Amino acid sequence: MADTRLKGRIAIITGGSSGLGAATAIRFAEVGARVVVADLKSAGVEKKIQDKHGADSATFVKCDVTQESDIEALVKEAARWGGRVDIACNYAGIAVETGQGMNKRAHEVSSNDYDRLYAVNERGVWLSCKYQLAQMLSQEPREPNGRGERTKGWILNAASMLGLVAYPYVSCYVPAKHAVVGMTKQMAIDYAQDRIHVNCLCPGFIESPMIAALTADPATRDALAAQHPWNALGRPEDIADAAVFLCSDEAAFVTGHSMIIDGGYTCQ
Image 1 (cartoon, helix red, strand yellow):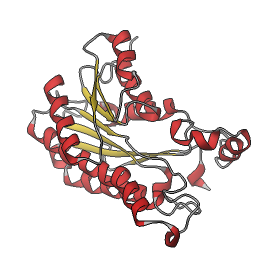
Image 2 (cartoon, one colour):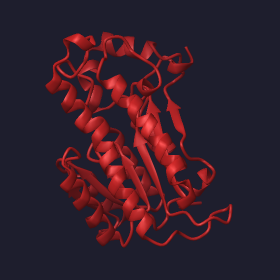
Image 3 (cartoon, helix red, strand yellow):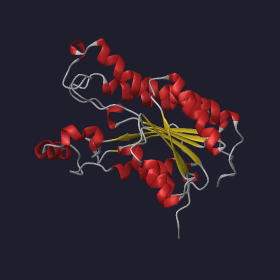
Image 4 (cartoon, one colour):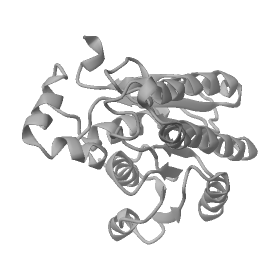
């Protein structure tokens, strides 16, 4: 029997051209959503979805989440294309790299590096939510779910296991991801009465382009995997499957939740 949990829903995915975003876009289309892939440039994800699910199943919108005008235009275009916006996954982010707070303590990080990381990983998420929430508030709610409630939307932010715990010498990324967890909780309580779900994902190290520079060396890859009790790296599909659940009626009573998908890392 086909999985149609997100049938007919319109979903925006920022950072949708690669990694976790691409996997989520593809998975959402498989369970019935129509997907707006948003990123700095297209990598053909929307074409892959169209080839399998039809020409109207996906579209691409160029968006730089550090530019408020881009985010506003993205949400307007998604609503025009789909008629509404039901789901928004805010995945756009930059990696923890040398020069952006990796292997540095706070006094060693430049203000420019700090501002750049926060512009994408924290402010970009906040701005995305700002316009997505406004759009969801303006539209009629969906049909009643299993609880008999009519939901106006689902927002899912990409945090990290490092939004819950610290990690040595990652002095910008850790605070930024903690901020995403905090804003998710705040928005969840502020928009619960409007029946808008706001949750976030807290992945461990996921084998994706974001950490490709680290996993290219087999010894480093094995060392990263060994930090998780599961002794493995996560897959983008692990995140996509969690996203489907959190953006479906199966999670009707879930909001403000930080879902940990880290192979046991934060249990330690």
